[in-house]
Structures are given as structure tokens and as C-alpha cells.
Length: 127
Image (tube, rainbow, N blue to C red; front, side, top):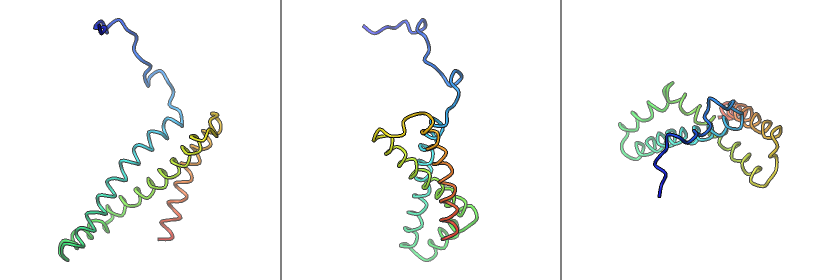
């Protein structure tokens, strides 16, 4: 039978007990960027659908995506795309059993953060 006396059991550790670590923060950031890229993907699909619909509807969608707000969304989605890619490579390295010690894991975390910024700026300058 299930234990219904839940009030006497200890609570699991919470964020107030542990100091946030770089690896946990980058893991959360990977989830956030994955979901944020979905918004950018939906905007791009909207842009393509508008282009296939009519010139008037395309003008509305294109006006939004090429506005300063649309440019900002696309720039940050590019940052998220590069970060998500580098974090995926980091996880592939970890899945093969390499770089699992704390010092190297932190270096990879900083590499993902710095590398995504550098690659985003380079991509934005090239495009």
C-alpha cells in the first residue's frame, strides 16, 4: 500500500541548498534555446506561407520579419542555434565518455557560451 503520510518525509534538495553550477546553467540554457528556436521557425514558416498566399499577405509578414523587432528575434535565434549546436557537440563528447571531469566540463561550458557569441557575430557579419 502507498505511504500516505507524506508530511514526515524529508524534502529533496532544492535550489536554495546548492550553488548553481555552470554545467547546470548551460543545461537549462540548452532547453531555453531549443524552445526559442521553435518561435523563430514558426515565423519563418509564416513568412513562407505568406509568400505562397498573396503579395499583400507577404508584404505584411515580410514587414514584420524585416522590422527591427523581427531582426532582433532572428539575431537571437541565430545565437540560440549556434549555442544549441555547440551544446549538442559537447553532449556528444560526454556521451563518448570524454571530458567528464569538472574542470574540463566547465571549459566546455565556457567554450559553448563564448563560441556561440563569436560564431553568431561572424555569421551576422557574413550574411
